[in-house]
Length: 290
Length: 315
Ligand SMILES: Nc1ncnc2c1ncn2[C@@H]1O[C@H](COP(=O)(O)OP(=O)(O)OP(=O)(O)O)[C@@H](O)[C@H]1O
Ligand SMILES: [Mg+2]
Image (cartoon, rainbow over all chains, first blue to last red; front, top):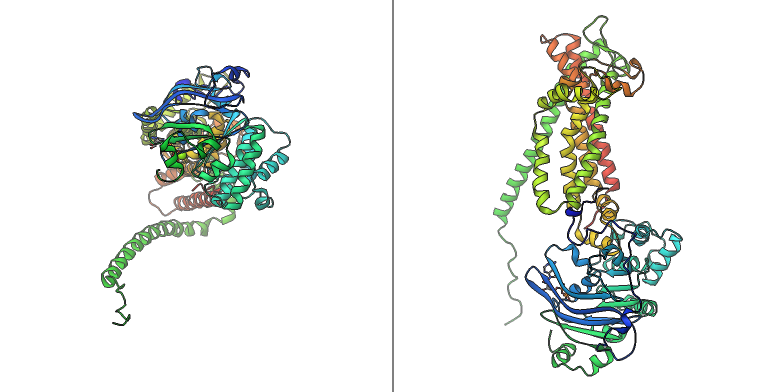
């Protein structure tokens, strides 16, 4: 298993050292300067002056925000405003894109995830992700859910873990008798829930969800929303959604991005939806813009 | 006015389109028929003289015989030593080419930066373009003496080992090139899914990319092995012309160290030794050719079935 430093996409050069964990300072978030939030909840993810470029196209423009622990933070904004880009900065998925360039600071529990000594592999084991497009592996439903646990060496009680993840993702009842069927033979909405099950099966402490309910009917959507609220009792959830009602229903904090990758407003969801500071945000939320 | 307006015209340009479609159809059919006919022609040209052969030598004697000596009396025409020689050399070539080819493909598809891949891939493919007779002499003149320099290894001037190693080198690019194409065709979204779960590059390559590209990789193996089974020049030049069966020398591995005859090199020998064409030995050439054809066909059919069975689509 040759792992040649110089042959890898930038940022992946540490990928081999599975065992290394990010050195975290659990209390670091406490003393960070206070942000738009008023309550005293702990900050898990803290972005400071984040700029992001694809080649010379700027996708994020001086974004600063603090995501509190154990809550649901929603990211809303028009298409192309940089929501996915921001989400993918948090677990360094953008490292895989050659032309991507990150500037600024992004801390997970006080540790800058772009520091040289951070292994993206270890980071992604703590920060799970559900992608915007469902991307199940061409493997059985069971193996899809078990995959992450296997590579992370969480081999014990696999059957129960798979069942539990599928139950929480509201997919179990539909697939319990066909777990060896290919994940690709599921419908789009089922695939989306399979990807959710796959992500939560490894128990990440932060879960990034990029429009996890975009292909779901109202019943499945409400089950996923229940799941998100349940997850937020133990974990931290960041969710991108185009559905204003959904953001208002399930999130504690809301970040509104507008075109150009600018974070226009960030704060308690209730306040953002009832009384936003910015007229542009009000226009966007009420559908006059975007 | 009434709403009974004239129905809209949806007839299109039927006459011309029909004609055009028909011409295409005939042209495509003709191409398909030509290649099928060529194959049938070749099989027949093998089968007809082979029938003459089987009037003198029984099918059982040919297929089950463990001795092949077409020149020295009593002439015997058992094909098994040739099948054994062919399988021996093919196995040796496969043992070199499949792992190296797959690892190379993985490196090119997953690890190499795009610039390096653009340079390396064509360089590798040059290997497939070297004339096989050159490979044969390379094995004979360089590889065999080199192997003989290893203490404890005593190879004949002509031996199966150096022929298989060099044949393996020759077919590496078939494996690596086709496998790399299959691996590069695996959508990036699957890689992202895997990285997103905390996978290392090695996890992604072995757990996602290779399984997802399995059918393409299997095809590359089959293609390369078929090429090895049919390869002639390297064997003729480097492996010699002694038909052997496993019992003839002690131990399976020692067969590698000796001169070996394959089906292809036997065909060359028979063809060269008897140009008049009327003898049983000459006709044996066609029986062996037919056997070779059937073997390759079976390999292809079996692998097609396997690929169909294990195919994992990802679209
Ligand atoms: N891989 C990439 N290469 C180049 N540019 C990209 C890439 N991904 C995104 N962009 C650009 O970055 C900007 C932000 O894209 P992003 O995907 O973050 O938007 P988004 O807010 O998630 O939109 P949507 O709601 O449609 O998903 C867009 O202008 C997009 O064209
Ligand atoms: Mg997006």
